Image (cartoon, rainbow, N blue to C red; front, side, top):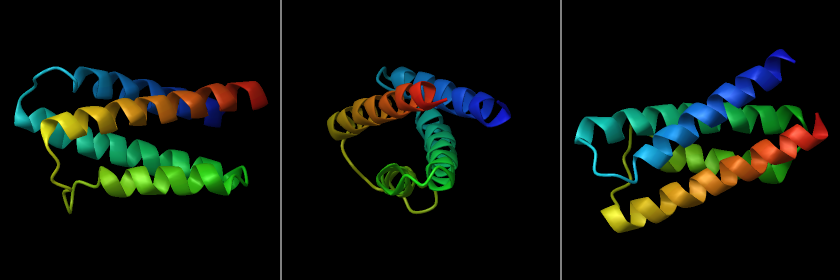
Length: 102
């Protein structure tokens, strides 16, 4: 039960931040967003690994690398908006999948 609680917190918080990122925010917000989403995706990758789900694990490893705050990937605002929406969808699908299996 405790691992599901962490999953809910991580997915909910990062998804909310990604939705807020679709609006015009100060640059500092996007720096914090990268840290939060990177950590969330790393957490979800470990959870997928523990559940023996390699496709989901690699998906979240890729997202963690994309949102990595140390070596930034420079994309335009429009492309980042599309990436943010795609990330929200991926996180939501994983969350619903995890709820069904629990």
